[in-house]
Image 1 (tube, helix red, strand yellow):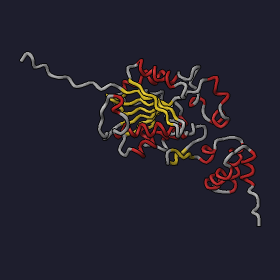
Image 2 (cartoon, rainbow, N blue to C red; image 1 turned 90 degrees about the vertical axis):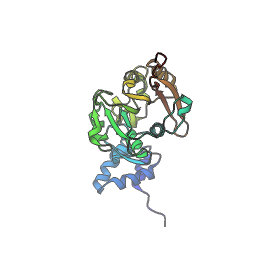
Image 3 (tube, rainbow, N blue to C red; image 1 turned 30 degrees about the vertical axis):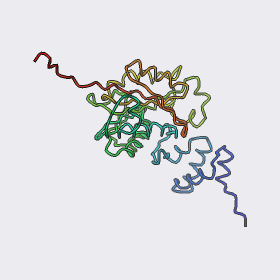
Image 4 (cartoon, rainbow, N blue to C red; image 1 turned 180 degrees about the vertical axis):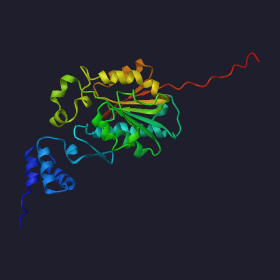
Length: 280
């Protein structure tokens, strides 16, 4: 006998949900009652991202808690996570940059503009023992990140401002907003209408937040440390140029598997002073 049609799946499919069966299963798993399931279904059919509706998103193998309005972590950002983990553990193509670094212990990583804290949480899962600090200017994002990271190290404020003054990091990660203001209207409704504008709007050319971030970043990096900034493929050369202006050596990483682009800026390593014995 044919099974009865699944009403929830049909409603989701009619609303344009491509993976309606999978979404219906997630909604049912997250709902504690029939009434809650109906309320969640209404939110999803209205266009709210599934991850915000169910309160969590999968990212780099982790289930990241999510609150309404908070930026949903994208698959492409796992490129930054892998690169950060490589730098923190001494793996990766350091020789190509003229640097040598052994395994890092007790290293510090900063997640600036952290949103849900997904980047910091994923890096911490890959690099046990790393000390992650996270900052966001959006109070809701900070509340969300405190569900995914040690809450005492998730701070509210603009860029590096709220961090302890003596903190220095081996890696700074930033998925700062980089969508040009005029392009926000053409974004998918799930992002445009349901993620806070402060997480999307990068100003006229998309680089306003990156400019301020990059100008401040070298002061927070240890020698040989890396600044990792997500960018669009088209913007990456401009982001790299901003890093060179503040004395960082640069490389653009493109990960075709996840369609991610990360611009890396490395702080120079200065050799220790050598005693001049010629006059002795």
